[in-house]
Amino acid sequence: MPRLVERLGEVARGGSYILGPEVSAFEREFADYLGVRHCVGVGNGTDAITIGLRALGVEAGDEVVCPSFTFYATVEATVNAGATPVFCDVAPDTFCVTPEAVKGAITPRTRAIVPVHLFGNVAPVPELRELGLPVLEDSAQAAGATLDGVRAGALGHAATFSFFPSKNLPCLGDGGAIVTDDDDVARRARRLRFHGSDDKTTFVEVGYNSRLDELQAAALRILLPELDRWNDSRRRAAAAYERAGLGEHAALPTPVEGADPVHHLYVVRHEQAERLRAALEARGIGARGYYRVPAHRQPATARFAPPGLELPGTDEAARTHLALPMGTELSEHAVREVVRACAAA
Ligand SMILES: Cc1ncc(COP(=O)(O)O)c(C=O)c1O
Image (cartoon, rainbow, N blue to C red; front, side, top):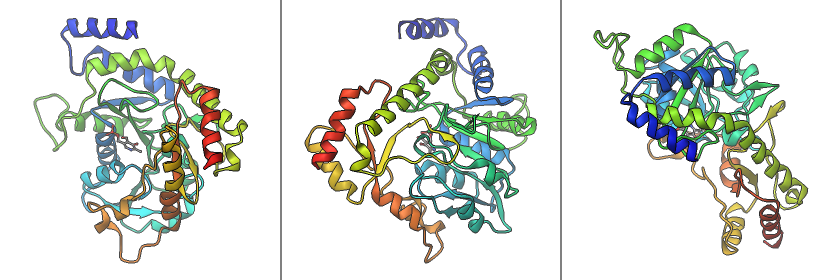
């Protein structure tokens, strides 16, 4: 932390605050970490999805297949790109979309697929790519996770990240990025983040004012080298939950086949999730159901759900999921306390 504060002081004194050397260096370092050619820093993970979809060629009136069981921003960003979100189901055990569910949601108007690596799991992107449409991974919750050894973010045609302070790779405010191997997608994303201009003089399309700033990039450059170590701590905490017998009291997180999740949140399933939450709370343990009302039932986005839409996996996940304490500093002792409290409940 002292190094972080010192570095932020240097950048603050340096006088360059927007799209300067820190952003360029972080973009290079994060792209190298993921194993992709390009990273484009933007203002937040929501803008990253909107810009990423437009950079992939999504236009007004196009359909984009995305899960309803996600943080609402995935869907909001799709609408803000001018597209119509088409909700598809998730597997209630992995909380991720399946190739079958996505396939069933594709129509002749579908222009892209946005799988979400929810809670730090990794959606089956290679199989989604076989469906023949551009895939934009929403990797906001999965920095450092892998699928068959490939990092989340390097699996699709492009991917987006959020560096919101609670994320596995955090900055000190809002921040996000689009990553891709595709030169044209990267170029278009760079243009869109700066008002649709390549040269700050001619404005060729209506874009956004959405940049990662120099102070956030400087913080991210200090924190990125810690990411793998932090993720290993989270994995150790997950293993400790299993060792302590949590599986006897709730359904444990299920990795997608080949995935090495990073447990952004440690989410179990329980038939009476809210009762369990209240019992844990009574013992001073914070637990939370994050997405009890999925996007296809939210007031702002329910209109995109066709009448009679059935998403049984989504409804089950929404009803049964419960995030238990998780973090880089979670001790074995704390884990055992949580499991004891689950047993008592
Ligand atoms: C799955 C998912 N998508 C998108 C976002 C949006 O990111 P941000 O808050 O940086 O806009 C978040 C996080 O907040 C998220 O968890």
